[in-house]
Length: 217
Picture: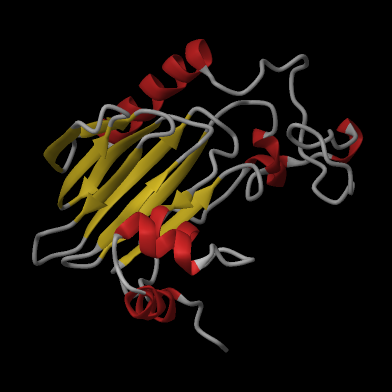
């Protein structure tokens, strides 16, 4: 717990100096998510209507229930969950991993990510625009950074569960999963683009799409 607290204090100091989101122009601007107005962020709720609930979220206090084929669960704590984060340029997430679980290759177009290992151990890595693969095995209490916009992943290769706390220098960092983006987009990316890009046949593309397609309820 002490190590996690130190990590959060350090992240707060760094993010205040290097936050990627635009600087705030007032003490606070609690997001009015029901305003129906689209701006770069959210319009502010009237100060008379804000409460402590706008700045509180308990959703990452405990491990989440993992029910995915890749064996991981990401619980976000961004402005859409904590309206008080609007204009503050920071957010968090918790990632829980089953044994052998994977957080698949993805990017955050609007933020750098820094993770702190709460439990277990992980193999992590990112790929630069020069196609250099940077990787590391990290354990409980250790930190790793993923630069903004670069493809990265986390993999639990151990036989026990693992979890990390992720911090971002954006109130809404955004996430693009490489596989999901390419194979489940709406409207669909044309098959002839995918077959040529990956040098596979249309049957293989179809198989991948069927495996990644959202489950019908």
